[in-house]
Image (tube, rainbow, N blue to C red; front, side, top):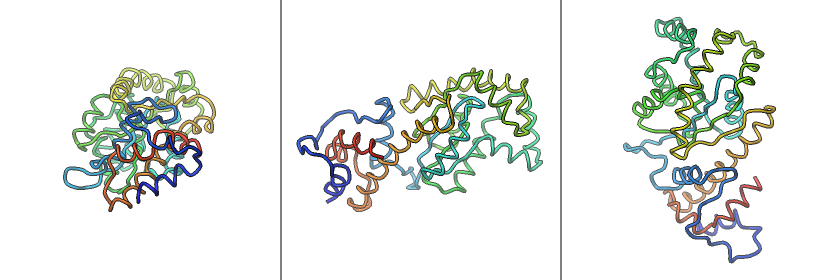
Length: 281
């Protein structure tokens, strides 16, 4: 029954039935490398996806990385609005702690003024609490991890790793121009601190991007151009993820609430169907 439902959803406009079954082929996702597509599908379709060792549901986690002024925060707001993600900004969480006037907040403020990285345990704990309180199924973590120590601490403390890493790739001169022009009254938006932050980003954040690239989790977004142009590329990626989630939901309902194995969905639907349906969204 579930096969007919999924087939009707994605293949209603197909003219040749001979191509409905395609076996053991890599699933193409628009502008994605095969490792990224494979990891996302395994996360969404295997029986293990979404469940921790204690049976608790784990959210789909996307890290959003990019240099200061790359526009990742602006894009995250739109992703959250259009695709139902909870948006957790590491920077906002830290600034919120600073605003409390606590001893921890004072420590964070001094570290930020010096353009240094806040200790991993502090940031991860703030993120962990925010994730638990949001109770969301899909979470964007904006501006984190900022270094390998952050990454290791997050995976150790939370017991999980991201399903997707989005990297907003932006030239340094463009980031400087944006930071100096945004006039938000932030203590770290002055030329001296900006230069420090960019050096820190280059030396500490890029190795994190390289690590997750080797894990097949990174999708690069060209962060030059207008906000609408950049979001066009972002929208294309998340529309593909929404398609996969839709198929998973149909399969679960038709399979007694249990997750489908990737191979079941893949051999039944066929790779052309995914490409055609993704293009229509």
